[in-house]
Image (cartoon, rainbow, N blue to C red; front, side):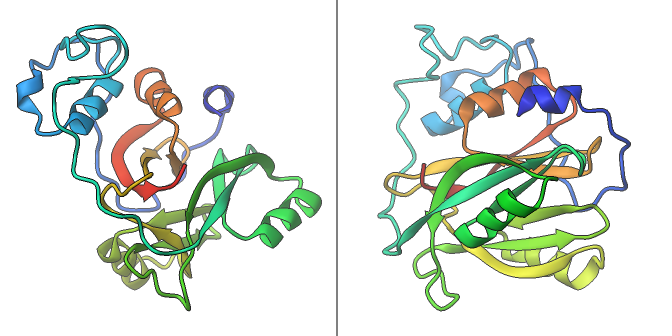
Length: 230
């Protein structure tokens, strides 16, 4: 995915969603040590955004930062059924990515819409019951006909703000359920924003996230969006 993004030449559209600025990757020490982090995951997230290990957080070079730090407490997973989330990519729509839990929707796109390339299962998530994410958090889905892209958020505040103030976006409901803190068996979803493509991108792949953060200036890292299943 990342190499395709680098090769793509597009014109930037107006910014679609309120974006939190992110700091680009750096090979220069930011003068932090393991004692500056409470949990290992926070140190790891910092290391993953660096070129190399300028702060020497990975003393044995195995890619794992600050191994003596405790891990963030993990809660029990929601008592909900899980489902695959399918991922599609469109070079025509300025590097848009689309995610869906609907096997029927995914099949229709594969067989009838040549604008989209099937990238397989991105991750798994929990299914709502009668629209309710019991013990979890709803991930809201928006579509913008102007920007030809979808947007996903687990933030109720962000969802309400977009629905109330931004006519570029149409609310399509709850896509699936996630959690805002780690639970048993969960993995983080990393969120990126590109002012070049006027798109957001989401991935659970640490290597894909690291590559974007350290080699591709088209994308700004916005942090962990929520947690899902691998």
